[in-house]
Structures are given as C-alpha cells and as structure tokens.
Picture 1 (cartoon, rainbow, N blue to C red):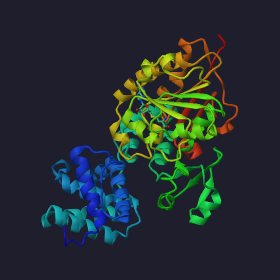
Picture 2: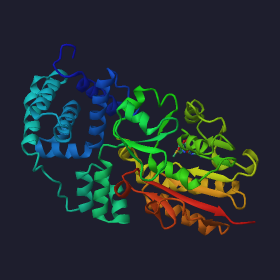
Picture 3: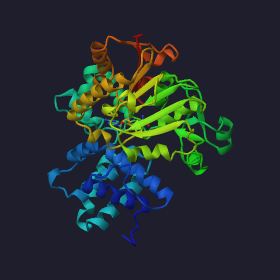
Picture 4: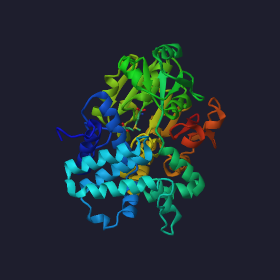
Length: 434
Ligand SMILES: C[S@@+](CC[C@H](N)C(=O)[O-])C[C@H]1O[C@@H](n2cnc3c(N)ncnc32)[C@H](O)[C@@H]1O
C-alpha cells in the first residue's frame, strides 16, 4: 500500500485488525506501529470495531444483498471499519466511504469497490433508521443492538431487569474516561498543563480527566507522581482503610495498583506484603516508580498460603480476586468476547477457594476485604453470603466511612450508570474475637 491514498492510521488499523482476527491477539497488546497520533487514531478504530463487531456484522447481513457468509474476511473487515467510522465517529461520510473503497481496492481488488461503496452509502442514507434485530427474543435483540454476548445480557437482565440492563450496556459502550490518583501533583499543576479535570465525587485526592495524553507526555505516570486508577478500585482501598503502622496482606496484588494506593495511604509506615501467583505480573509492581519502600513482594498461589508464610499479626487482608471483569468491560474492547459462562463457573469456584485460604490468615479482630471488578451477583454478594454461611467467626463490618450512595446492603458497590465509575464490589468482613 506504499503509494495508497488511504490514510496511514486506517492502514495501520486494518493490519492490526487482520492480525487480531488471525492470531486472536489481545487488542490492548497488539503492536500497531506508526506515529503516536496515527497509533491513537488507529487504536480508536481497532477498539471500536472490536467492541461493536456483533452490531456491525448484523448491519452487514441486513445491508448486503448476497449471502453474507460468502463475503471474504478482508471485505468484512473493511466494511466493519467503514461502518464504524460512519456511525460512531464524526468522519464526514464522503471521506469515510472514499477511504474504505480505496482500502478495499488496495487489499482485495477493484472488483469489490462497488460492493463496499454500495453498503457504506446505504448505511449512511439510513443512519437514522437503521435495520433493527427482531428475533422474537428481547434479550437477544438487545445483545445484538448493543454488541454484547447474549449470555451476559441474560445474566444482567435476570439480576436488574431489561431496562436497567439496557442503560448499563449503553454506558459500557461509551468512551471510558480516566481517573487519576494525585500522589505528588496538585490540581493546579493539571491546570498549568492545560488538562481539564473535575474532582472525584467519591475519592479524596482523585480527579476525573477526559484526556490522559498530556499527563503521559509530562512524564508524570513514569515518575509515579500520578497513577491511573478506577474510582471503584480506589474505593476498595478506602473500604480496607489501612492506617500508618498497620500490616496489610494483599493476596492477589499484581499489577499492584491497589498495593500502591495502600502504601501511600500508610505514609510509608508499616508493612504491605504483596503476593501474587504470577511473578511476571508482580514485576510491574516491583518496577513501579515512586512505590513506597514498605512494599514487599512474594510469589505463591494464595490458596496454599499458611500464616507461617506471611508477616505476623496482619491487621488487614485484601483479597482482590480474579473475576470476569464485567465492571470494567468498557475499558477492554475484547473482554466481552473472551468471557464465557464456563469462566463464571470456574472463577466462582476459585473465588471460594481463595476466600477459604484468606480466612486462615486473618487473626481475631482482623479485617478481610473481598473485592472484585465484576457486576455479576454470583461473584459478589453471593460469594460473600456463601462464605458467611460457612464461617460463623466472620461478620460484615458495614462501611460507614464511605459515601452512602456507594454502599448497598452493607457492601461497597459502584455502578457505571449510577456513579459514572467502573463497576466494583467490596465486602469488609471482621473476624470476631477468638
Ligand atoms: C483482579 S487482579 C488483581 C489486581 C490488583 N489487586 C490491583 O489492584 O492491581 C487478580 C490477580 O490475582 C492473581 N491470581 C489469580 N489466581 C491466583 C492465585 N491462586 N493465587 C494468587 N494470585 C492469583 C492474578 O495473577 C491477578 O494478578
């Protein structure tokens, strides 16, 4: 495509999407190449096409006169990119159609130019009245319209009803905003950098920003002066509420975002023992800039830990379990397609095992916080209730110190629709006196 009239960003996006289709590479990890600006534009298209792939494929099946399954993969890919730009980005229609017709000519051949042109122009004409799914199954239709797996829509519809599920799905499809923990930077410094910010309504010392780029360019992330963290995740640390001088065991710690928040809250006084079964993932914490020196790392499967393995007399144990990540679905474009109902079953079993192991490490009067970034009750309140049914020596310690609107039935619960944050869950449990 050396002398192509197709923009470099679109060429890069096309190549990345081809690689993702062929190798099942993670969208976040695929090497896009190009200049930072081209990379940003290409990543937007790659992430958007991945997120919206079910809806975009539905539109192709409705707008193509032939047999959609007979379309070549390269043509489908180009159509999805074109439809995404037309319907989800502000690119003028003429430019978008022209660029994708040219791309089709470059990578497939002139013979498909008319087809791509026709489908994209029809979609543009019908943009306010696009074909809608009508399978006779409202949950499936909603899943197609919002480009989600049907099983997940069914789980949410069961837990919160169809209307609330629809609001959640739309929210999870919006462009995610960022929250920053300000460790060594003030809001005035952000003003000087020209970054618009609003204070987090829920977490002291955090701000919401629309754009991260200037902060990255200023080197503040690399220097550890700020940290990107969801407000839900930060509230889990507030729920734990460690104090200077405490001893905290963080059992599933990598990559260590919560560990770092904990250590900052403790003002460098006390001990934070950060365990994870993945040495590779723990490396991010070991190399984290500006991480306070009270953090020690340890590599083990938390299910096998005994009190002899960990520091004596911990005041707090944090169990931030592996989960479906359904509360952060908006941030990871491909996560919705990677998860299966079978994963939920396996994760729930692992979460129960981890809770059993964590309980063994909590001394009388000690605090155990169980947390997830899931929006599925099976991984949240149902796990805690099952644990309490097995352990009469633990009780819920309601988080009276947290803002009341992020508390639900004695637990921390943040919701993308209600709070404009990621979905997070946390239970603060206290071991009763021996
Ligand atoms: C949700 S992530 C933790 C995120 C981390 N707390 C943070 O805030 O950056 C879950 C972690 O659990 C780890 N993990 C999964 N199974 C484990 C096990 N059996 N023992 C210890 N760690 C485990 C994973 O490697 C992953 O790093």
